[in-house]
Length: 155
Image (cartoon, helix red, strand yellow):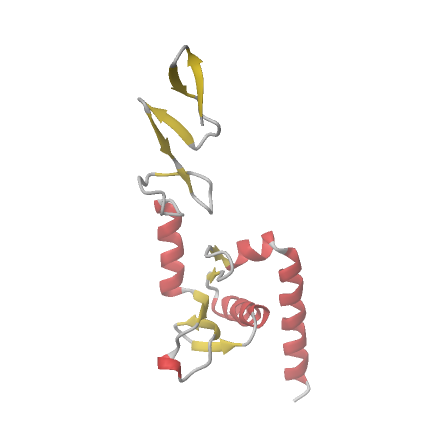
């Protein structure tokens, strides 16, 4: 936003910490979705700083990755949540809670970190951080894990 403060000349007045006046132009500064640090991106399309991008990519490559897929094997497999890990391959889960329960079990078993790509917001999370930030989902995941193991013990 700009405010007329000097006669008929306009002077830029930042309305937030992401609007920075540079000469007569206004530059929008993007904040990292995960850690709130400033992202050096002129287009404003990058959502993560370099450190968070590297962290999320490393977890995707060697950890447990939960994502929603609409196109799977040319339409042969159903759309839904998939949990991927090097040791377990791709596993289908009907719901987000099922996927996160499976992922947390693999994470615990293999001592790995996990990444969750939330299809509703387009934001990637470390699974532990997602569950800490969303206690209602964490409670559902814990209930699903308890239910799953009680069913296994009855076999």
